[in-house]
Image (cartoon, rainbow, N blue to C red; front, top):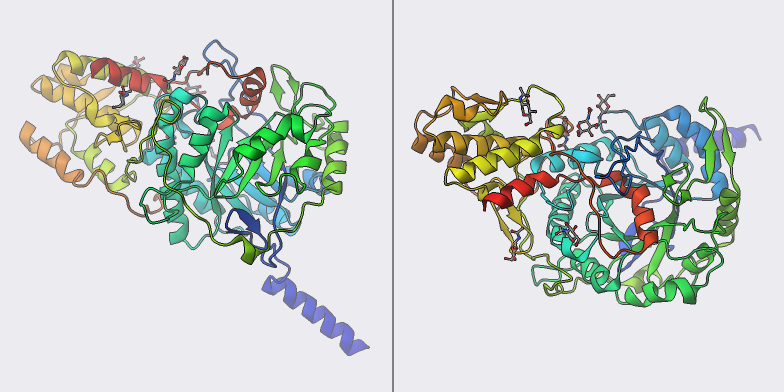
Length: 554
Ligand SMILES: *[C@@H]1O[C@H](CO)[C@@H](O)[C@H](O)[C@H]1NC(C)=O
Ligand SMILES: *[C@@H]1O[C@H](CO)[C@@H](O)[C@H](O)[C@H]1NC(C)=O
Ligand SMILES: *[C@@H]1O[C@H](CO)[C@@H](O)[C@H](O)[C@H]1NC(C)=O
Ligand SMILES: *[C@@H]1O[C@H](CO)[C@@H](O)[C@H](O)[C@H]1NC(C)=O
Ligand SMILES: *[C@@H]1O[C@H](CO)[C@@H](O)[C@H](O)[C@H]1NC(C)=O
Ligand SMILES: *[C@@H]1O[C@H](CO)[C@@H](O)[C@H](O)[C@H]1NC(C)=O
């Protein structure tokens, strides 16, 4: 007896120590997800992020937050919420913004122990995300993304990293897909280099299928002609709010089911949960997690655990007491719990039956898909810092919040340079023509120093031409002649269109910053999409003036 008890205790301890009880690794086969035991994996998820501060203004029509609260950095809150997540029956949470310099051990380990995976968006509000009006895949964003991956790569329960959320919101913005694909490419090679099996995802806004489908197909297509997934996302998310109230598969989902019938990679609803008729019944779960939709979809993420305000109402399913200690659930919570509890999606096809993923050729460019298959290069930190140090006039801001001024200064500098016979082509990129200036991969501050230097040189190094109202400083270490400066700059940028496996930034966070922030409005979107965007735009920011300046000069 005694020996048996001891042996059992030892075996149990050994099992815990050796990680036998660890959360199962989820991998992809064909267009589906599987756990290590070969069972099909369906995401039964909930969005888990408190809404950041929203500053309503004419330039922010979608109420996109400009700050965030990292939900995985506060162990006490996670411990408070974990029993509720378990009660809800979720196996995944989606988190929109995290801060790589904070410690996430407590939350991530607690979630892992409870069998809950995370889908982590890599972008941040304001200058931490791709600007949908002036997209760029630049060193500051790459460094931000890799810094976040570094902070999370030690956890076993990261299912996927999203490289963007609703970056494209209209057909005329689809050129940004070239940049999204470049981000997916570089994040994928980085993950491979650190032996991470986390998937790379993108969360798309729902929209008219005329451009929603070409965009989805472009993000998952092969450019090389060799059935390669090198530039393809691994996991497609659709933020879909079509099912409202007591709807039916036929009324709400049959269209999206057939539109994606032959899609090549795993897909899920990265958000769902309409609010036009509260309380929410969440009967869509019965359709999504059924054999009707399992041929295409691998589950979804209900929006949202925490309260989230929109123009139309509240999306939350719990409220937290003002002292932060008590959770009160609503009938939305109970309804979702019931639906997740009842869902029994089929365990088919088998993993071997799912085969390997096929990567079709990319859809042709059209008015509904402006993106070129010539993608932007891998942002090169070493090249950009080499360039910055050799430039004759440098951006030396007096404020730490350069986000507020860099856009305006780029406008000014490009406009002045234009008047002096130059242009800003070197810092500009065009996702439609596939032409990317050699400095377009650099962070906004380096771009600004570059343009300031061009102007300064164009004015024969007149000190006044490097002032920019006190934002510029002459670099005494720069090569002493214009031609020497040019050759130094070009020696930094010997191969500006190269793609390579990026390495992690020395410190977390970007070196540069984006421009001024303003809202973007898409035309023709149905109201529910506006509504969804107002909540989720957590990760989408805009830096309009940057290209505003570039274009006026061109
Ligand atoms: C991350 O947290 C650190 C430490 O609290 C803070 O200084 C920094 O501003 C935060 N970064 C972001 C992007 O919020
Ligand atoms: C797309 O069109 C809308 C309205 O027609 C406009 O406001 C927006 O700036 C355009 N976006 C781009 C990226 O051209
Ligand atoms: C920086 O400036 C932007 C744009 O004006 C503003 O939205 C943001 O809150 C500022 N950030 C800080 C930390 O002050
Ligand atoms: C980008 O290139 C396309 C195709 O060459 C051109 O039509 C478009 O005007 C360019 N866009 C910008 C913003 O320069
Ligand atoms: C720098 O540029 C900004 C934006 O144009 C301007 O507001 C500011 O006065 C300039 N000078 C300094 C010292 O910040
Ligand atoms: C955003 O701007 C802040 C300064 O305001 C800077 O510290 C940070 O690195 C920038 N982030 C990115 C990703 O550019």
